[in-house]
Image (cartoon, rainbow, N blue to C red; front, side):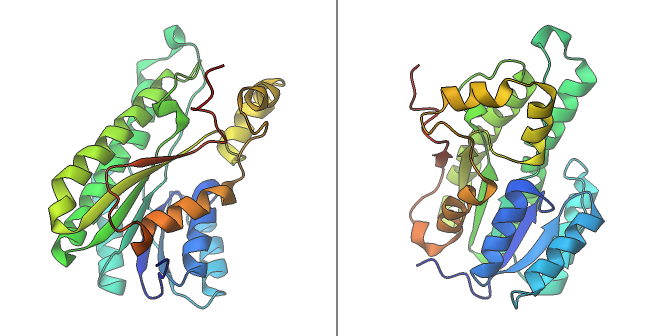
Length: 253
């Protein structure tokens, strides 16, 4: 049920953090990889790791906010492999500022990367999946789509939008064989979160105290849900977002 041998998976934000962990897990499950992010050097390093597992890797640098670059990455994937079976829409960013201090350009950048980027990549890959008659899209959401995070209004708004993009695409494409689901982590030990914890000495302690499991997630803990949603094990699931949050959203405290 979890078989991915010979499948083609495209992962955005694949150079580090959650994207890197999911990319490696897909490779271990037998999938070939199309690796996307803005940093070619990071992608080349990941590609070496992937190839060491005996599967193929295509490096396709891409800014997900640029529709032309998105389409070029998808075209490269089709040229190389002839299909795309799985999309992990992972690229993302945040800013931490009080809402009243957020400049419009910073708000727009977060929305562009986290929401518009998800739409552009899902649309471009979705066209190919619709031609194929099958595919699984997994959009990386966040606890911030369900609960307000202080100082992260743009991020919360963008991830709430991601959840609705997930539902909307799932409903539109269900009859044509394309499933669209989400995966929503809580605070995870990634470079993005490290930048926040480095800037705020008590931040990690406050996050742990708010989380029933009393710790942050590790990037590799997102892997199980991703493989489940990518594979036929979830063949009758679409339009759902799985919370991988250590109990954060269940906690009424």
